[in-house]
Each structure stands twice: as C-alpha cells, then as structure tokens.
Length: 229
Image 1 (cartoon, rainbow, N blue to C red):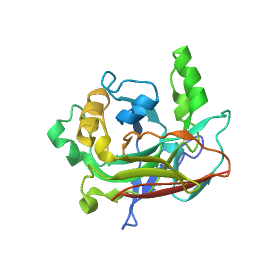
Image 2 (tube, helix red, strand yellow; image 1 turned 180 degrees about the vertical axis):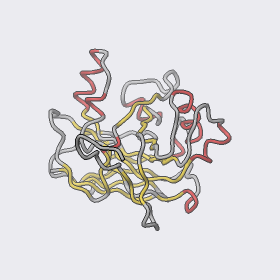
Image 3 (cartoon, rainbow, N blue to C red; image 1 turned 120 degrees about the vertical axis):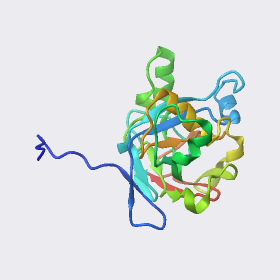
C-alpha cells in the first residue's frame, strides 16, 4: 500500500452529458492560430505560419456556470472561445485516417489568456506558461460523446460578454481539422486517454473585466457560461 507525505490532489474531471460517469483529464493541449481571421488579427500570416501547440495544466479547468476571480498580475485578460476535443485513446504517430477513432467527445472551452504577460514573454523569447497556464484559465462545458453527435466539422462558434456578441465564427474556418490536429500532435507527444485538445479560436478576441458574464457556445455541442468577479 502506497504511503504519501500528504494527500495527493484529486484527478481533474469533466462531466459527461447523459451519464453519471466522469471523464478523467490527463493533459490539455491547445492549438494556436487555427482560424485564419484570428491569425491575421494577431498580426500573423496564416498562409506562412501553420498552427502550433502549447499546454495548459489540467487543474486549471473550470466548470460551466462557475464564478472566477479576475486573474492576478494582469491588466489585460482576453477571452478565446474554442471547440474542445476529448480523447479516449492515444499513441504516437497516429495515422490521419485513424485519428477520429481516438475521440471520445466534444465540449466548449475558453482559453483565458493574460495577454500582457504573454506579450512580454514573447518579446523576451520566453515560454508562455505565465500567460496561459494560470489558475482557472480553462473553463470547459460538459462533454458530449461523439457517439451521440458525431464529429462536428461545421457549425457556429460564438462568445458574448454581457449579451454583446464578441466572437462569431464557424468550425469550417479551422485551418487544421480535428484529425490533422490529433495526427500531428501524436508526432510530438505520446497522446493518451483523457487528453483534451482546445482547437483554436475565431477572430474577435478581446479583454474581459470584473463583473462580466461570458456566454459562448458551439453549435451542436453545447454552451458555456462564466462570471468574472
């Protein structure tokens, strides 16, 4: 029997629509600049710079309906609404034609970003963790199994703040589709059951403030609501 010097933290999990089971989360991968219009608004050419990957910590997940504190040490926190892909299987060098076999289901997520800290890290050539992997940085809705909804390749993705529309795009605008994300990630990491992939955000990212109510969704997948205090 294993003895610990202190109680180990609980495994981060997500609820599953239509089930009492929970989905245990292993890692969170994020795809950068996966919508051409967002790449342009961030000052990059989507035809020259393919999407890239970074990570958030699993314990930064926040459930639908949560109230979070405005992130510390930042004056410029941005919202990025995203489709989330949840894996039930993994491996290395996964063939493109088998990639969707690894998918358990989908959710709606927010990639909250301390943009000022991220920008400073970029200028100094440093990693982005301080801008991306802070507490409560990954709000996420319940998962909907692919067995129920299939694999969405099109559909509206949007975000409102206090009822005002801020982001409004379509999944068919993604540069890299879900099978390509999985296949490419598997050449860089050993993917595993429980991995989440935040699949990139459309144009319209911008700041959030204390008191804001964020409401977003992905057509056919679900909605996500968050309050900032």
